[in-house]
Amino acid sequence: MKNPKLSYGLILLLFLLILVSVFTRAEAANTMAAYISTPPFLAGGGVEPNLLLLIDNSASMYDLGYVDDQRYCYDDNYDPTETYVGYFEPTGWYAYNLAAKTFEAKTTAEASIVWNSAKYKHSDLCIDVDATPSVTAFAAKGNFLNWAAASKLDIKKEVLTGGKYDSTNGRLVLESRGCVGRRFVKKVAVMDQLFNTFFLTLGVRQPDDSEKASASDDTTRIEIFEVTQTGFNNSACQSAIDELNSSSPNQGQIKQDIEDCMSFTNKDKQVADSMSAFNHSVHNCRKRLRAPRFRHSEYPKRKTR
Image 1 (cartoon, rainbow, N blue to C red):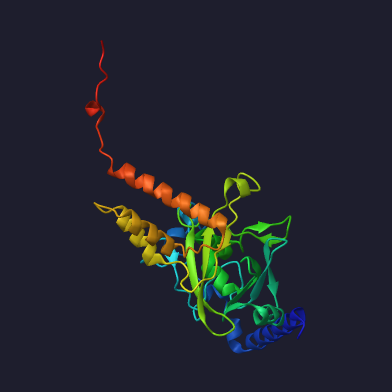
Image 2: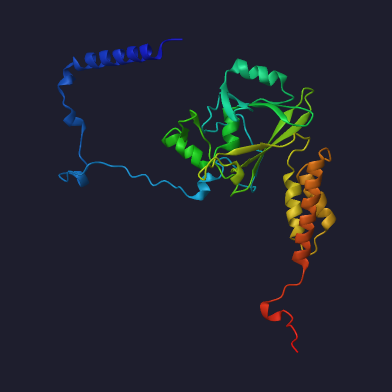
């Protein structure tokens, strides 16, 4: 590979030689005044030119930059033929360091080692899990990571300044609140080693208070859910919400829709217990919604003697 500085010097030298050869011709006698005119509104005013940038720094800028406008907090339309800008180099590969809890740039050869041994694969990502199941390896192209996690604020900072830089650790820091403070779900199809189709579901969110390094820590968190044959079932989730808001909600149907929505399996006792508690909470909400409502003036008055 050529030395970049040397190449730049040669280009500059050639450019200067061209300028010299141009100005040796007769028209070199022309002055720059022939090509400059002062705008009338600046003539004689002595006003220095300036540029005013009005930048949106509202909370909505922490929402994700790449979303499906037709659905709320959910997107499964990753297109590897499109380019998604962000902190990650779209064509580069990155692997997650489980110990350091950060993404690290990898060469194509290094990424191929992870990709070849991974259990689930996509052209732009791979993931390996154990029997628990817990993630043991995760690598992806920067294009996918930008689509999955870049907030509108990340993209704006990347364009204007190169991004939010952590000088202490020498790295760029993504900032997001997911979907208005809740998880934004991203889903993509992957294949196992026998070319069977499965789905990887990611939950992109802001950090919990217990996870924050400081009060101003808004570092994006990406949760990886169990790879299943359906992944996040958005239609079932919407059905659960619609059923809960119906005039006569069916608790059994709500429970089934919730379990389908979350691709619930009974493998993990802790997850099973959490699901039972969640369904019980939904049941209580349903009862509360169906309970008669009284205005303050309609509450039964206490009898006095």
